Length: 77
Image 1 (tube, rainbow, N blue to C red):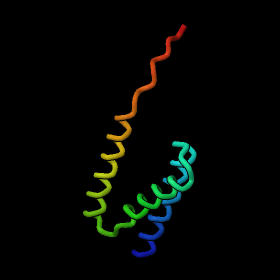
Image 2: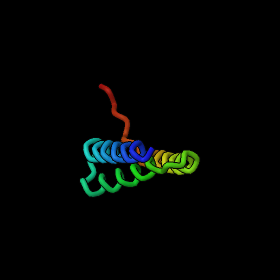
Image 3: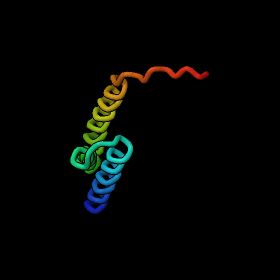
């Protein structure tokens, strides 16, 4: 079980850091910090607590995305 927990945390850390850096165009430091936070959340060995914390973080991220202003509509033609 500890091997799976560590592997899941490292996998999440790397994948989140890469997505944040290359897709969201954030600096490596900020990308690594977000990856580390999500990796720790994934590595929480207690399913119930990890599920609650994960739900809160996903909800927070979703609210953050909805608060961004929409780009102006393009006029085709």
